[in-house]
Image (cartoon, rainbow, N blue to C red):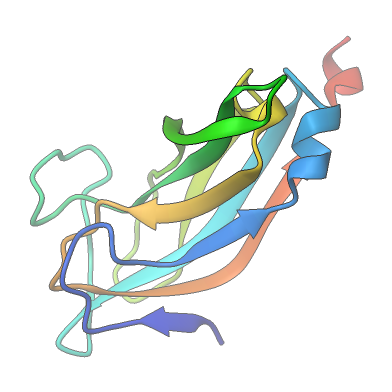
Length: 147
């Protein structure tokens, strides 16, 4: 059982979650793996998006991190916002009526390492489609495996 976002009016109207910035501050340049299972619906019926399309009517959801931080770190003033690159994208296999995987690897960048707020959110799925999320995780990548 997942959580559903419905009656959306814009492609960016979707789920989001604040991240604990204390973890980001301590882990500059570290990697985190994102796994989210999602399902799309249109008028209550399953809808299959195309992970490789840039057409807004069939594009799959993506995830991004939005940061709020101080431009002047010493004075702690002048709060601004900056987007990171995409954190995760949908891929294949992508099965109609099933929960499909949105996956990505996120590296804590210089903005994230000093951010006052970091917001992970889902975007780009067409506004006519409802989105159901289930089983989401953002966990540190164990880099010792490849050393």
